[in-house]
Every structure is written in C-alpha cells, then in structure tokens.
Image (cartoon, rainbow, N blue to C red; front, side, top):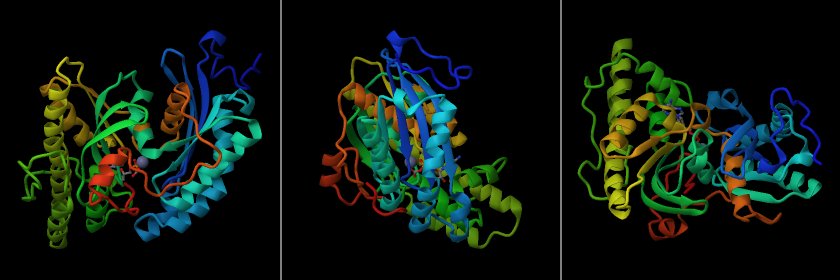
Length: 379
Ligand code: KG4
Ligand code: ZN
C-alpha cells in the first residue's frame, strides 16, 4: 500500500481504484521557475494538487526583458526549493509519484537544462519514468486543467514567443493552420507597452492602462485583413503605435492608445481565427466544434471577450484555461506528462534540451520563415 499523503486534510486521499497517475511537473523554459503536482484520474478528470510559480520579473525588470544568463542562474538557485514546496503543498511523497515531467523546450536553453536535469535526477533516484514535455504542448492542454475538453479542438496559442492556430487531435498530434510571420502577440504587447513607458511584462500593464480608454481615438493598421490563410502579423501595428506614442503627452492619450492597441491585437486574433474556424468546420462536418485559446495573452480580458463572441457566432464551444494557467506554470507540464504517460509515451534519461521544438514539425520545416523570436526563434 502507498503511504498516506503527509497533509491529508487539504488533499484527502483518492480511492485506490481511481487513483490514476500522480505526476510532478517542472517548468523552467523562460523567466518562471515552476513545479506542480497533478493527479490525472483514469476517467480523464484532472486535479491540480499544487502549482508553485516563482517569477523572476524583478531580476529582469532593469533590462526591460528576459536576460537568458540571469534566468538560468535564478532557476538553479530556486529549483530545489520550488519542487520541495510543490510536493509539500500537494501532501505528496516522492514515493507516491508515477512519473516526472519536465519542459525540454522550446525556450531559453540554459533554463530548460536546469529543469530537465532536475527532472532526470528525480526520475533516476526514484526509478520513475521521465517525460520530456514540449512547453507548447503544455499550453495546448492547459485548458483541460479547468474543464474536460474532448479532442479534437481548434487551438489559438498566444504567448510571448508564439502565435499559432493549430488543430489538436491528441498529445503529440497537432497540425498547424497558421502562425505569425513576424512578432508573437505577447511580444507585440510587450514591445508596445515599452514604448508607452510600461514595465515588463507589458501585456498585463497595458491591459490595466487601457481600462476606460477610447480604442477608436487613434487609427491603427489592420494587417493581413482579407488575406487568405490564418497567419498573423503584428510588426506594422508595433511601428504605428511607437510613432503615435512618441508624441503623446497626457495620461488620457496614453490610455486611449493602450485601448486602441489592445483592441487591434484582439481584432486581428479574431479575424485570423475566423478563417481557421471556417476551414476547421469544413473538415469536421459532423459538428462538436470546440475552440480553445491558451497562453499568456489568453489572460487578457478583451481578447477573451472578442474570441468568446466569435466562437458563439460560429457554433463553437469556447474554452480558456483558468487565469493562473494562462501564463507559464508547471501544472500544464504535469498534465501533458500524465496524458503522455497514459499513452505510454515516456522519454529516456538522454532526452535533450531543445531551444527550438515546433509542435507541428512538418509544417515548421516547410515554412521556416514562421519563426517568432523575442526569445530567439523558438518555433
Ligand atoms: O505563456 P507565457 O507566460 O510565456 C511564454 O511562453 O511566452 O506568456 C507571456 C506573455 C507576455 O508577452 C505577456 O505580456 C503576455 O503573455 N500576457 C498578457 C497578459 N498577461 C500576460 N498579454 C496581454 N494581456 C494580459 N493580461
Ligand atoms: Zn509559455
């Protein structure tokens, strides 16, 4: 029999016949050191027993963006304590785990190596399977931490390094329908926020500034409007917004520009998603249409509102992760690990850290120009 959890009050033990799998997840691909323990039941239900995220925002703030060397060192300094905290908070002992899942890319390779090495060490010491998880697959599945969403679904993945539309048919089964040809949506938020004098990360700061603003005050470009396909482009918006920002003087003007930029990003996401929705619906004539938005930008209220409306209008059920699981976290990595474990998709201890690791490798190979890159060309 397995030992009882050390903190049974906050996490009552689950009945043995339905214990599913208990997975520790580790995430260190950018500027968050995170660990989480997730239980995935045999029927697919998911319980997040703990999710600890330690942000390095303050360490990077003076530089206006993430500095890879600072990130890697900060991960080394905190990873052990974060893992220990996640285990204690979950009331779990290492001997109860069924697997360890760690992000193996894409991302800043120094950071990825820290988390992946920690995962390998635990797997080796405890004789557990290791699952090397693609960070993007974590985001892709993150909405399943809040609701049992069936496969397949149409996914808009919008984060600091990525902006893609994908058909997700299961773990390891993604088909890319479109992606950005320049900046990622989160990157656009961050860069424009910087020109408005806002701190990094710019997305949440810009959303706050935009409250009550007039989004129609400044004319902003609508990139790729009417263009075939489901690709994105944000560089024109970034340039236009920077030019306007230079001549702003009052707080009201800055607020209105922030509202305009936020609306323009949400509008482009919706316009391009609408095209993907039409193509996806044609490919799935029997119905059961599901749309998921995930990644850091999915935390934006305006983006959620506009996409929810679009989904309703086109007969799609709308899903977004709980806010805590939009930005980087380890619960989504643990979940991806648990789903892979259920399918027998485990990795060897020789799994490599991969700075680039597209979800749809075939599509990425055929259009290598689609490589967003605040943190290097991750996809
Ligand atoms: O998923 P994430 O934590 O990291 C990556 O994998 O990139 O996403 C971070 C990105 C940043 O660009 C940040 O500005 C953006 O998500 N973001 C937001 C909001 N919260 C985070 N953008 C707009 N509105 C928000 N509320
Ligand atoms: Zn991410």
